[in-house]
Image (cartoon, rainbow, N blue to C red; front, top):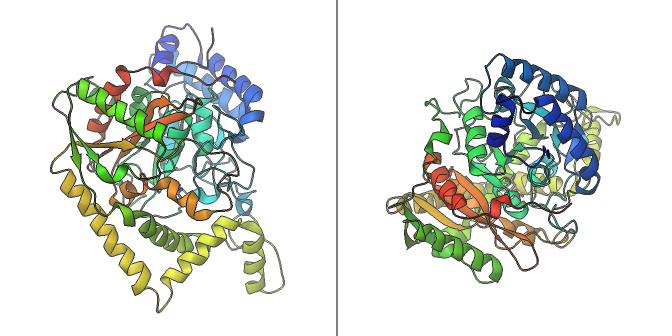
Length: 484
Ligand code: GLN
């Protein structure tokens, strides 16, 4: 039996009927990692002993009849989530030797659910990027075409799930870092509403935008992951104190009467024709299932990328000030304190992180704050208002996740602006704090995946998941696997 090609809900049946043990499943995934990861580069740290230990504990729990949906399921974790006793690099040299003393809340919740951790996944340094090429530990290769990027910044998470190295994974999304790589790798990626999932133990990039969310091979698994990690956490003051629904229960398969808005601003000049065609066909499929499709407008979309690169860099410049050689990771001693700060940060951070720290520091500096940061905050409100108005008319917003399929490694590394534009359809959702999901909706003639994005009003993940699931039931894109 091929143990690496199943979803978590399929494996649940096999585990609970004792047709397979979690230990067997875990060993199969560790073997798969050994076979394919030298070509993919998704894992920064593999945890063979810990994974087998966790699997044995899960097997005991299954024996005792105490299994939940994720008990015994082998998962991967983006290396921006702190893990007690396990090195957490954030894809950066500056944290190459950092071993956190505690677990992120989302990680602890998965562990409490009985999941098995295979290891820590590659990413753009401090989650800054759209291609995973900003990792200090080398790029990740797209499992569908090894000469192409997997998207970013959660490139390792998306590639590991697509390449059958992990059943599901956690990633983070500040401006698209779950949805865009999910789209590039043909997996499901969900960015929850801001406040749905605790950010405690997520190493902060831009705190007002960051959210943790799942990667999975289908919507049902994404729903189970979301249920496991959601909920109030006193350790994150921005986490919402509201009951967590059983998201899997929302998957009724029925979208009759669902009002689907298609923003005219999400079909832009210069976008890839095959992407546009696949997304339009997907919208027709939703219509065929009984959804009512209509055009909507999000007029401030064109400002979102600029606003994001002011707010995200400003927050990053503040958040990353703590990496100075004193408390965490790398320290380059250089005589006095100030020189040590400088030497540590010069050696520890990569070019993109330095660019962002400089941009953010500039935007916040005296004399420029009003012109840049404050103005960006105002326009952020306008972007959020666009969505509020649209969600007065429709239940979900639907469009492409990214304007192009996965690009070639190296294609955009010399042109940061081109790279930033990969996120034009994903960034507005973060600015407004909304939930969003990307799911497979086709392939180009050259075999590259295309992703469909659905966005919802705050805390309407159930509606998003229901629509995504209904679409998935009507198509088979999610069942295809890359040949490796
Ligand atoms: N690609 C975007 C950036 O570079 C988004 C990153 C993210 O969501 N973490 O900032």
